[in-house]
Length: 194
Image (cartoon, rainbow, N blue to C red; front, side, top):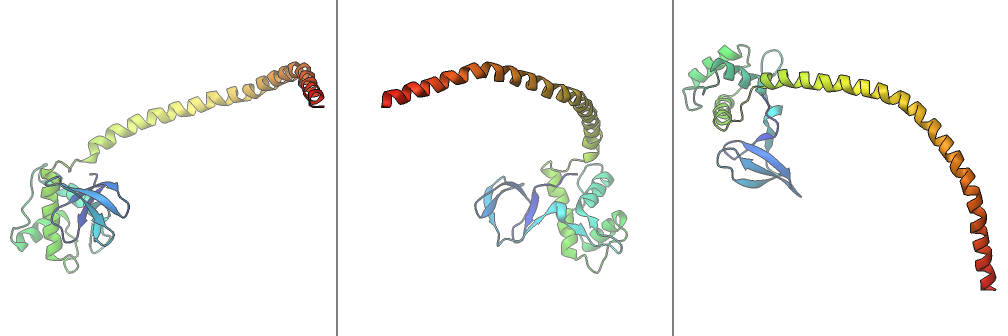
């Protein structure tokens, strides 16, 4: 699941996609209504790819939790963030049984479910497994070709310097007769000046 460029802005409902960077701000677009506006340095911006949920061991990245929900729901909506808190807590315990219930606030759980449903409805939840399987095969083949291409270029590079030396020697021989012409032109020019 790729969450790159998707952010949450504190005090603004919904999620936003970063479009470009302005002079003193970033230009974002709402995933819901596609409205664009600048987000300034004073806004509290959180990138979804950097968010994780506290557990009793290591923190669990949001991406992994969203993927688990997606797989559990077979790509369909999960419970609404407006559901009873007990329902949301039981649901998250099925997916992440070791999440830290003291440090993960009810508002955080509600955001998690709200963000999942929002990302799903806007078409931004795409599993990377399909993409990852296809991409390494394509990348592996060009790397092998590049290695053979560099191996082929190495012998050519050794031969190439030998040719320019011979060519420069020929140019040097042909340049010697041209040099007196330039000198004579200078003498002619200097004699006219007198």
